[in-house]
Length: 400
Picture 1: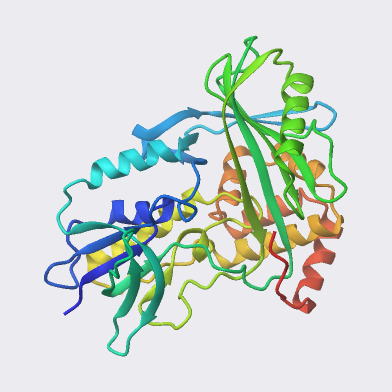
Picture 2 (picture 1 turned 90 degrees about the horizontal axis):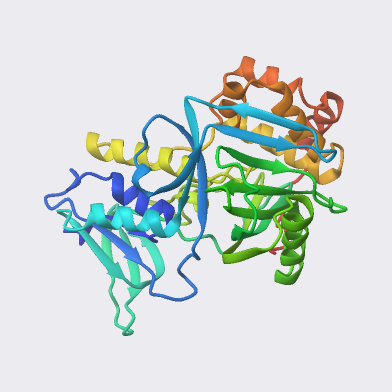
């Protein structure tokens, strides 16, 4: 007898998304129970954050969406502008607090679901096809479980070996500006009118929620994060000097670091058995862009479908192999300086139709579409990079 059919470790985007999709009562055992383990308040809980993704039509989490847009804009270093209308898709912004509130409301009183606040230690596959989850509650008491399947969303202690790793690091201000400087219909996806670092690239990112209000981020792709003071100085220059906001109030801030890497994130946890990694820990972050939320939803949906069908709910690869190869080439080309990052991204948005580009960025494009996008990049540097990749050894890279 097992204590639970499914245990989900971690209640961030991946854990909550999977719990939200699982049926009320899983078919593998009589009770079909699911246990969702939240870490106690403190450093193990992820900080508040904002996720963005594009989606056509109504979505599962629309009630928690802060704002959405049909227009995306990219600005070159010289101020040149490309605007893309992405309908029927919308670019959606969701804040983690609103997402968690929606999911927790929907999960309240769901049959077969238990919530447990505890710090998880070891997750150990057992010889009978189950796994033991060793946990400690906030009072220091052991709260161990035995489960048929375990889905672990905790970040790995170390990033797997890779040929290339950049960091997408950023700091954002939620602001209220003195002047009506924001266009609430358009997202500035990449604004390269920022000082470019010696290695990598930088850009401004503007998610307007009104004429006076927006989330404004300063983002770099580079080897290491900045200090909080350096981010704030960059944001000060960007908001006042580039956007011309005038006086503004900073209502709140958020900051983060996303690894951009060609590392292979194993979906089966060390030790094998019925223990799987999900979310960013299972490779859901797109190596070339840092987008994660949409891939988490695809992964969660596939696991839930398998549970409903009574099949082993093994998480699928979040991104197809061809997309991961293209990410590896792009990251290597950026990291070596063979391509000019701002010029590359501006050219893609300028020359590739919006629908094709979104499919490409989502890893859903066909081979012919990938080739059509590829010819819009600096072909010779990209071919040289692709040719050298098989000869490069994956190695452990320093953590930030």
